[in-house]
Structure formats: C-alpha cells, structure tokens
Length: 272
Image (cartoon, helix red, strand yellow):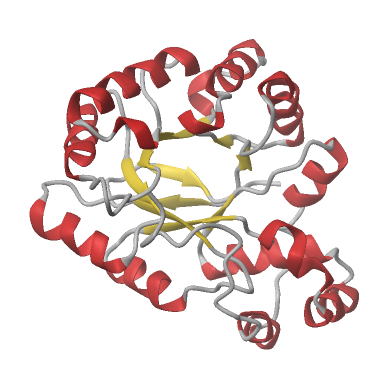
C-alpha cells in the first residue's frame, strides 16, 4: 500500500502515516524500528527526551534502504531552550540519528514559565544552515502560534498535538489549517481508551475492520499525520493497512462527536 503524503508549507513532503517510538525502551527500539520498516513504514517519529534517537539511527542505517527515503522527526529536549543549548541539541540529534539533515525538528513543549523564543531562533538557524529540512512545534496552542507568526521569520510547518476521538481539538485543528500548519496527532487512540467505545466498536464491526484501524482511518480522513506505536509486528502491519477502505461521512461525524475534551497527557498551558 502507498502511504499518502502531505506537502508542508515549505514544500517538503511528509508521509501521513508514521511509526512512533515514544516509551519504547532503547534496548527494544532498533528491533521495533526494523519491524516497522519491514511493514512498510517510511516515517519514524522520535525525540531527544525519548532517549532512543541513537537506536532509531542505528536501525535505519542498518536497513536495506536509502536512509534519505525514511522521513525522520525529532524534538528538542525541554532542558535545552536556551539558544546555544538548542543549537548543540540539534547537532547531537544529527549525530545520534546518523544524518546530515533531520527531516523535521520540533520544539517539544511551549513551557510557559521558560519560554520558547530562543529555542525557535535556534531552529530557524538550523533550518537556514541546512541541518533541518523543516521545523515546527509540538503541543502549541493558538496563542503560542500567533506569537510565532507575528514575531519570527519562519512559520512552523507542523504542530504535533494530542488528538483522538475523546480530544478532537477542532478549534486548534481549524487554526492550524487556516495558517497552513500541518497537524500531527500523538496518542491517536488515547492510549487505547477509545478502542472499547461502543460507537467505534459498532462502526468497526460494520466495516469489517478493527477498532484501531477505524480510529486511524478517521485521523487520515481528517487530514492529520498520525504515528501509532506498537512492539508487535502483527499490530504494526494492522495499523499500516488503513488505505484500502474509507469511512462514510456519517461515521466520521459519529466519531468526532465522541469528543470529551479529555486529555491523556499534560495541558500545554500548565506543563513546565
């Protein structure tokens, strides 16, 4: 199956489905990434704070594929928001990932008590120097994004946010779309919480798919970029097999109507 791509606001194309390595232990990461590549994934999402960038880099380097054919995203450690620290962090990620250029690099959290101005300037410098193909943010709210638009040179290409049927963030998704920012969804199945929802179960039974496939397909049809995580090769393949069916508009609406504004992670306006 061919994974569709989304063109970012600087012309870079990103696969709409990727593989996430959040909470995968470093010792397990290389095997997991290898299995994901076997399943067809060509987009890997990691972060400095995950502690497994090196293992992601090792797996891609050892695999029988041109490393540049694998889209890699990483994120700035929360402890490195100072300008010089952020520049050093970018170089460290490049070294650990064994790449001359990281496809997408994000500020991981806005950190209201710390700020992100110097961090964004460092990402702009990394982009200008060719170390980063695209830059963006994670967990940013509209008021954070407005500041970036008003006070800085480069617009973020991506905003990675918690997004799932119990937290649809429709206003934020609309803001991103209006400002040509692609939205990525982390915790796309709410850490499994939505899989037992009777509405999703009914749709899954009717269309002959698993609940996870239905939710991931909902994300794809919303236009978001999504990267489920699993250590099981069979589940990786199942999550990948979502491009040979479509959800009807009514089913999309039923799933979106499940919103509870319920987070599984921190509130970005409070997390420091």
